Length: 187
Image (cartoon, rainbow, N blue to C red; front, side, top):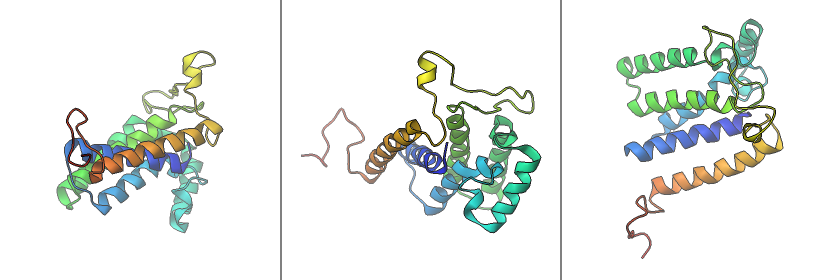
């Protein structure tokens, strides 16, 4: 999937976490969630995160030569490494708990989203190089398959943006959180 789709999914994860756990918004945790939702694609020199600076472009090209795109950075093992690093930063350098959790979840959301593409992800690397994908040649699972940059991804992006707007509205108090009782917002 492309960068904007990953960012939208990362933001959905972020605002969902804030709503579920009743935490407050911070720009730093929001920024970290966006960065972490793009970070697995640092192994592609054509990705949004790689093209953001000259420094990331240079790193991306080296990683791509060494590992290829959708290699170990798209695995649960590397997600664990990222989580340990974020936990260390949370414990020792005053990175907020919300940043730690949402950053880790945003990274995971990227991996899960890429499992819906035909190429899939090496989810269990370094144990096995088997790629995991939701896509199959026929049936219901084929309809869940999203080609990167294709029409389905564009439609998915619009749908996810709508979901994100609803979550932001819920967070800001524009809609009632409890739909079983009347709210003072809606007389």
